[in-house]
Length: 218
Image 1: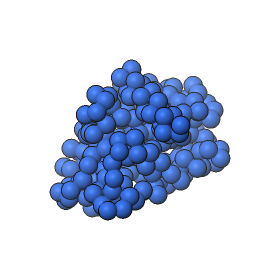
Image 2: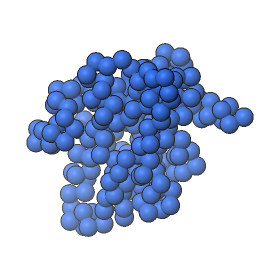
Image 3: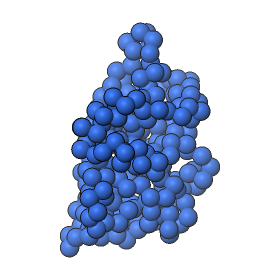
Image 4: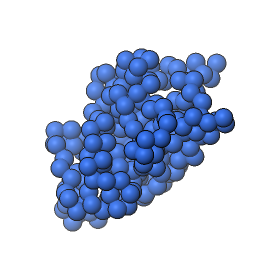
């Protein structure tokens, strides 16, 4: 079984959880990982070269998913638009590039850890999830945990992940800090912006997003 692994900080708690979840040798042997940015993982999932992954919302619409996602209740810090005379989309993204069109925002789109670094530097920007919340009073769902098969396994992952409060070991936090160039305290503060529970309000937020995507097409 191949799981598409996105290495951004927003999924750090989930990756820590999965290390414990797959602690038996049998599970370790049956679960392999493919790492990449969201757009690449999307493509691998769509072509069935990975069996499950957190898939960008714009791509997850037609696939099975459990009630886990990457969700911003208000601000997100890691999905931003930088004011610019030209509109530049982020090639690593899918959902965020459409979100700027829905919100009528112009500029350069940045996502992930490099966006978070820019945010922390204090540079001028628009937080896209924050603007979405201000306009529609709903969370924004950036991705859903989608799968092609083994529904029971992913429902079990959902149940166990949601009920746990994952504590990130200091050595993993230190490694993440070194890899991204972001201080440990800033990583922990950032993770407070992220929710993983695809609850009823998040579902309404995603429904609203899909409705606006459909209007863009017509």
